[in-house]
Amino acid sequence: MDPPDALPAELRAFLFSCIESITQVELLLLLRGSDKFRGVRDLATDLRIPPAAVRRDLETLAARGLLEIKVSGETLYRYGPTSDELRQYGDQLAQHYITSRHLVLNFVSTHARSSARRFADAFKLRDKDQ
Image 1 (cartoon, rainbow, N blue to C red):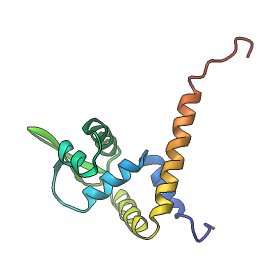
Image 2 (cartoon, rainbow, N blue to C red):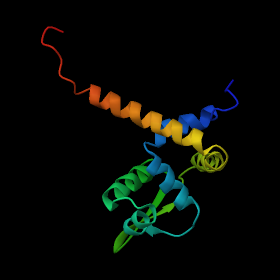
Image 3 (tube, rainbow, N blue to C red):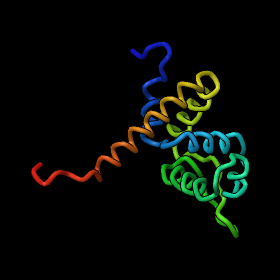
């Protein structure tokens, strides 16, 4: 059983498997709040994040089945989970972001740091005798 101040196990599993950063959480929730397709520059301006970083995160979220893509002169994105299950996780994330924002941000930032550490550790030079 989860402690009362913990995120539900299914939400933690969703965050662990689909979300790599707080920026991705913010992008997902920003797009979830509207039916409009939006461009990279527009979203980058809203979040005050460099467009290249926003583009990378949008592409990741789209590849994971959370966003729809439309190309019309520029690539546009809209919230559009590819399954009811992903839509339920998006709804659950939005609810917990409102009620327990600190838990969501803490989980995502801890997961992001541990992923970065594992990635960096994979490239550490090993002693020849090991």
